[in-house]
Length: 332
Image 1 (cartoon, rainbow, N blue to C red):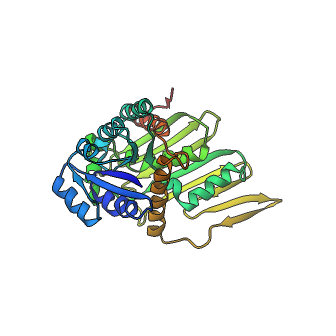
Image 2 (image 1 turned 135 degrees about the vertical axis):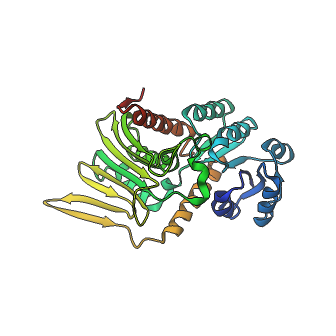
Image 3 (image 1 turned 60 degrees about the vertical axis):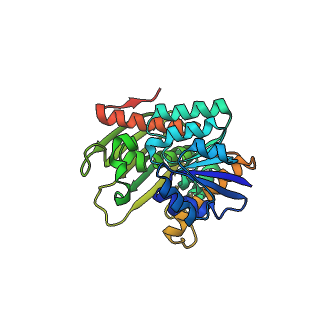
């Protein structure tokens, strides 16, 4: 049995992580840690978790723990991860890894020193449409990729107002939604490295953080990508997309579609009828958390690692710098 400690008993833990973790065969949520111990006890009782703790130190002293799932607010990610790593635990951190590149590198260095695994929650990698697109690109079905367009436009959630407090979140929509887009983009481009970025940010409905970011990304290979993410663009519905163009075809998600040239025409492959968005959303989290559990058992290699998170944070900080200085930023 793999014993998991959940750190942070907030909304996403209750709506996503606990229902899934408590249903995975071979996994036991051994305890819930939250500074609000009364809240931790109520949530533990609701989900049949045997223990509630005020601190990670108390939990690892009293129970045998193999891994931790961190779902606290972003400002506590680094502190909680470092404490778990120091105790020898493998760690899953719900995105983003931390508020800054420096905090993310602290986690990276600590994990290397203790030889533990750290996975960052990028559930979009486990969406069926993303998996199909990634496989098509990796097999060379659309040829060498030279251009991608990624975007996520949605309204800011009322239950996550802390996300617009920079000391807690590390930033605005770029940290909330953009980090997933950057991960998706680099996931598709595989080993290609970002050379430079140009970004613009806007504060239409927020003051201390940005609510719109639009960016152009240049890769070392000469490939390019565009990114848009927003809490405030005027749309009646959410928009999440990734369009990838290669020399022999193109691939799209949400829904998945593959277009390839055949003679003077085109052939199109599409996904079968899509499952409801809510079902697909939950399934991606299920696959992600099962992957973490299997990885810390040594069954499969870990994906979405802390090393990858460091590279993503380099791009994010370059985008913030570009927007502030109004110029291209080259990533060293």
